[in-house]
Length: 210
Image 1 (tube, rainbow, N blue to C red):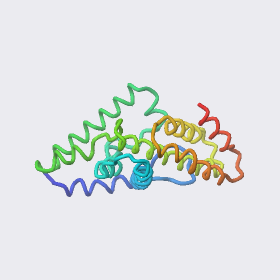
Image 2 (cartoon, rainbow, N blue to C red):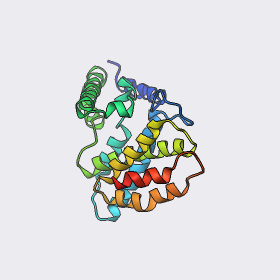
Image 3 (cartoon, one colour):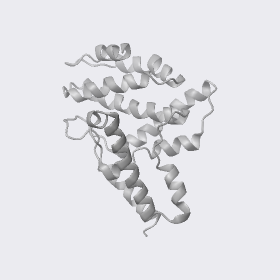
């Protein structure tokens, strides 16, 4: 039994897991960098919800956003098109991830902390406002990562698919912060478009029309 030290030490591994593996990228992003950005997005999205009278459980929000991809230590970052190719496959991947997290907790975490770790490392995406904010924040980072590649003229089709699918997912979530993102943030992003072989404005408009 190595204790909580094992968990803290394992966090280094998230710096070495690169997102969207196997594709040419102008910028590479690690899972740990992604997780940090998701926390930042979620924090602002939750502020927008609060300004609209929604009650936020901030402790829960920080727990689920900061730890939402911890399971990738065990399985790596599986390509988005593969991961989401069917609901059955996505469920199986989630079950494997949750099983390995449970095994890690059982083998390494002291008994009096096990319940806390199970709560913090659980799958956070659900129908609660915090779970939905996590979903939006996670997809927002996909939007920003894909946008940066498209803006530089990266013609890998996967980034167009990632950008479009993430936008479609975001716009179908019923939150005040989604309205704000679509009306105030996304237009500023698209205005930033630089001359490239990819028409980002057109892809954006098509995604929002779906």
